[in-house]
Amino acid sequence: MGFVKDSDISIIPRLLLNAGVQFGIAGLGITIVCILRKEKFTAFGLTRKNAGKAAVGTFLCFIPSICYIFASGQFDGYRPFSILVTNDVLAAGFPVSVLGMALIVIVWGFFEGFNYAVICEIIDRRYPSENQWLDYGAITCGIICLLFHPLSFSFWGIIELITTFIAIYGMLIVKKKTGNAWGCVLAFCFIWNAL
Image (cartoon, rainbow, N blue to C red):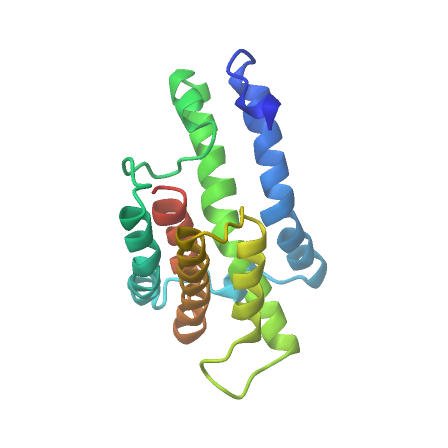
């Protein structure tokens, strides 16, 4: 983390290291599984059908999380695709800024959001639930999301845990109901990594 945050080092190796770690966490596994099983990403909901419904439904699921960000005083501007090094990438100038932002969109937007959709689907295939609102894949992904981020047991920390779980669980239920995973991707592009 110290290396990635060190602005005295060129942005290219810092971004590549950060993207490599992030892709290793949120993209490499699902990509390997899809290649080995000869499954296309479209099999996990990357289709046009119901994309609008998926986007709107997912946004609605993130409203408690957005309210938490505003109520806790954490909102300091809307910046889509905002990660640790976004400002340094943008300051690097053309073509580094364009290529760097494309990498951020792919790794932190597409793969981070789509990763949850794939993991949820694979768990649901293995452990299907008869109850339409009880989804083992969505529960697992919600817990995984909480464990990958700092935990705080203060008042605001507990509110964050609850609203984050609602957002991830809800996003995945919307994906299940619509059959479309674009809501998951858009949530990570324009909400999760933007507020």
